[in-house]
Picture 1 (cartoon, rainbow, N blue to C red):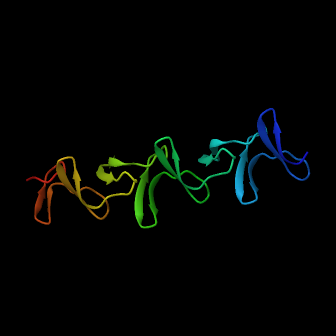
Picture 2: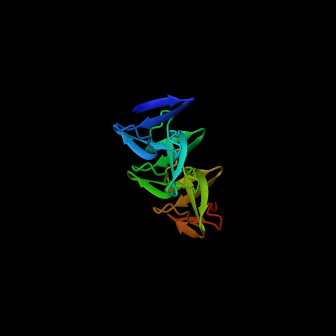
Picture 3: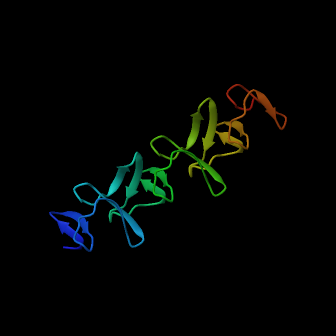
Length: 159
């Protein structure tokens, strides 16, 4: 028995010597993960202290991935990214669960704003009825004047 085999509704792969494969295996251009039992995994895979995602065909995914209403970013190695990520010229923040942050986020003692697409906002921002200023680092300005406008302790422009 070699190649792909479906046994009792589960998927396995046997190399040309008939050996059942386990762990990460590259087949063609795609990576697959097989449990110690040899069963191919789909969905989230936790391997070597890192989360990965394999699609319904078992292929490891990379890049942006949406599950339900939550976006995740999987690096070129397939690892789920967390923390600050600069992708192209845009900064994103991915929480400890890997979920892409949106809206106001307090990271440490600093407030940031992330658009609906997850991009970190800079410059002037209207949020509700109030205006805020976000430095080029994304940090919200407060208790200061920006371009002649006074910002209070909450960061909102004091009219």
